[in-house]
Amino acid sequence: MNTEMNDWLWEKITDRQGETFYTKKGLPFTYHVKGGELFASRRERSITRSTFEKALRKIQEAPGEMSGPKKLNVYGAPYVWAILWEIFLREEMQGG
Image (tube, rainbow, N blue to C red):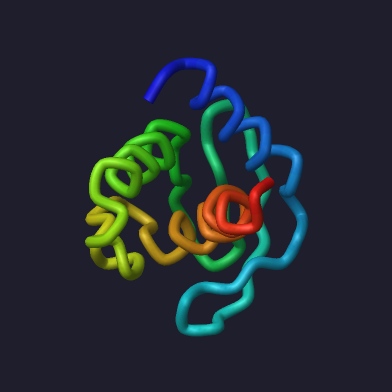
């Protein structure tokens, strides 16, 4: 994944902070971004920008195998999955 894509992804994530997202199990959460870290309302530790980049790279490399958060195998996977689903995957599926 190139730098341009990484920057685009983080910009989208930053733009949507404060909105309510839902984990695959339906748990609501919000988040805020500070620098290269994302702080989810249901989590004490931050999730880094590089974690999102790694997760997206895994999805792009093996899209058929990525059926849910556990397959990502990254810290904060339920939150990473929910955000990527809304910001990247849903837009891609809708041609955005």
